[in-house]
Image 1 (cartoon, rainbow, N blue to C red):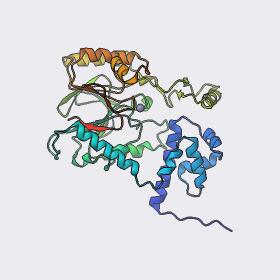
Image 2 (tube, rainbow, N blue to C red):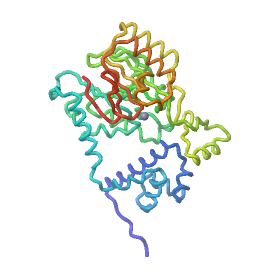
Image 3 (tube, protein in one colour):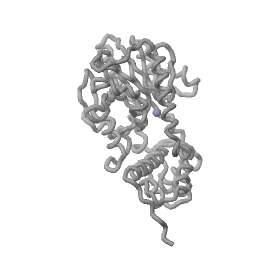
Image 4 (cartoon, helix red, strand yellow):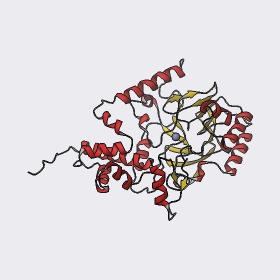
Length: 364
Ligand SMILES: [Zn+2]
């Protein structure tokens, strides 16, 4: 007997395609090749390819096996979960924000520009959905949301078939202007291929008209505040090392690392040496700060100063020359607040230094 084909509405078909694209992104983020995931899931590479395209005739069991092989089987329980997680996320953010700015009046359009700030995104901009971040209803392109690195919207090597274009266009269509410093998880080959432009007193890469990369060592004047920016950080997830794709032994080395569950990255595919700054960028930062009398309102970075890192990591993180550089800045520059990401947590480290991840807080 012929199997009955389910007819899907276009919206449902699109949802399935988006789910497939999410699964593919999850696989790429884990640096897993299609062959290995297919093997672990006990399916063919062709079936995996269909799943990543959101093909509706693939059995749900095959989808489940792939999610399991990516360590994402919990996602299955979210099917039909009525956005419970999103709701909790929204409540968490609103509660925190209320506490962070207790005397804040409700903002009206035209009250002057606002700045909100948040932590790492890794190419996932769901926290800017209108139901999670409803404040955007009162925002215009004169208002800003700053991301403290690991923006992740410029990641894929192959731009032509990637999900990024849609995400970046969506971000650009938001009522606010998105600004970001770079983290360690950005595709620096592509990020740095954008022309360098002057914007609000410093150098930027304009990814979209209202999605702007704030370069390292710059002092910007944004919404009436002086802001020093310094992106970059050393990756923590490279205990297995950095592989070269054109190494003749690449596939064997990768297989050995994956079998031993060692984290590794691939040069120019998932790791770039520019994650740490050049001497020139560090000097430029010092010179620009000096030109502003070593005094700014805010500092925005991805990682943080050595002494700050010691307070959050409990000795877990090794210091590197960027931490040391930021330590020098911490000691020689006057600032009101310093916001950073990288360590995937939300925490007021002290009265001045604030680590951000999911939270979105208003600072102006
Ligand atoms: Zn991160």
